[in-house]
Length: 168
Image (cartoon, rainbow, N blue to C red):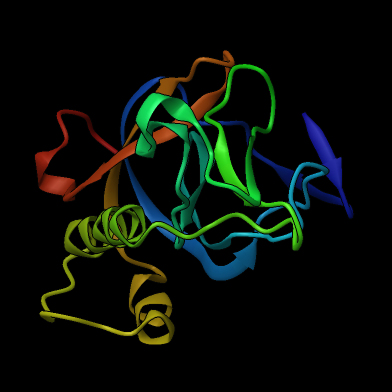
């Protein structure tokens, strides 16, 4: 049991599917990194039920990486940098230290946010990020939790509650 500010916080959701409510939703910036000077805008979503909770961070910007370049060679004035030796290598401007945005990867990431909106029952064809945060709050969704490559639990997939094979 963890006690923070005299309030008991439940544990992480177990691996598997869970029906949850979105209890927190907001825009944040990724943690600062030593290898580049920019931070990624993210949508933070906390899903919770009576057995626990899990937080998902949806990146709202994607970046070019080594796989975008023939033979993995960076153009002049740029280099590839990664968070750690096992992570993808992002294209970074040597002068500014900023990663280079990839419109294609950004579009894919925003599609993931659109899939979350669909899972929450939002029916609008398009919605701005501020309105989305309001609409997601208190929505009932199903979340699939898995163990990632760093042996940590993560919210892997969101779906409509009726698609889940478990009870809340």
